[in-house]
Length: 146
Image (cartoon, rainbow, N blue to C red):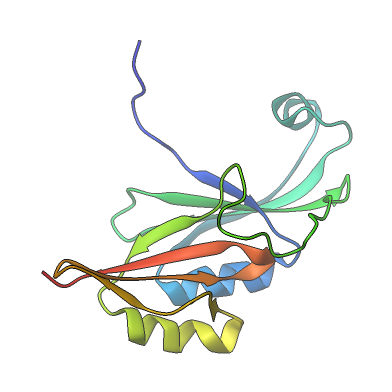
């Protein structure tokens, strides 16, 4: 038995509209939105009484997806600190290849995108940076230059 593909990465957010806008401006496309609840959801995620809204975002070409989820019930548990550092154990970032890091940052800053350090160059191959997006998500950007 082998893995056939990775379908998506799930991210819980407080403001679904703001997260959809952020990732749309980044260049992902909204594939759809839906409210989900019921026994199948409870069983899948291991919580009781789930009511949530999801938005599925896909990369151009449809090879990657982000599932953004806002929980109405049970209320999402905040993390402490709210903005975890990039070296926190567990899933800590999502990386996207973009055609122009600087232009992408210019589009995301008005939506709260904050660069964690700066834009760095790795040899003659990439320009890279980490930025914090909605719900404290660390988003990495890579621009191929070589």
